[in-house]
Length: 249
Image (cartoon, rainbow, N blue to C red; front, side, top):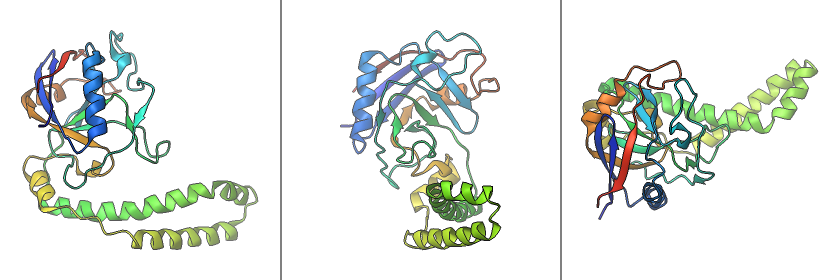
C-alpha cells in the first residue's frame, strides 16, 4: 500500500501519496512528518504555472522580507529517478535540490519539496522540447569537459593563446559529441505526451529532480496557492503556512 500524507495549510488541505519505488524519499518524508518538522513552515517559493515549494525549516516564524530557501536538515538524499514512469506532470510531488554546478549527482534536499502546477503544451511544443533537450545533452557534456580543463583554459587566456583555445575547443566539442552519441536520444513516452498536452506539467524538469509522489486530493488548494501575489524573490507577500502534516494511511 502506498502511504498517504495530509498537508494542512492556511489555504486548505492537500493529500499526497508517496511512491514505493522511491523508498529513501518516502521514508525520509514520513520521518520528517512524524518529527513535526514541517509544522509551521511556509510555502516560501511560489511561481504561477510552474510550482509551489515548501519545507525550509528556517521559514518558521520568518519575518516579512527574509530571504528563504537555503534551510536544510544537514543531509541530502541520493537521487531516485524512476523515469519515465514518474515524471513532472501537474500534481507531481518532487524533491528540491541544489543546482548541477555544485551538485552533479543531483542529490535531493533532505527536507524541501515542491508540487508541480505547470502548464499545458501543444503536440508541436512537446516535439520542439524533445529537440531542445537533446541539444542540451550535448551542451551539458561540453560544459562538464570544459570545467575539467578550466585551469588550462585560464592559463591560455592569460597568455592570449587564441590558437590553443581554438584547438582545445574543437577537441572538447568532438569529445562531447562522442559522449552524446553513446546516449539514446531523449524522447517523451506516450504517457508523458498525453499528460503534458492535457493536464500539463513541467517537462523540462524530467529526469533532473526526483519525483516521489503526487497529489491525490486538493489540487484546487495548490492552484489557490500558486495564485498568491509574491515579491521579487517569489515569496508570497502574505504568508501561506503549513499548519500540520500527518500520515493518514
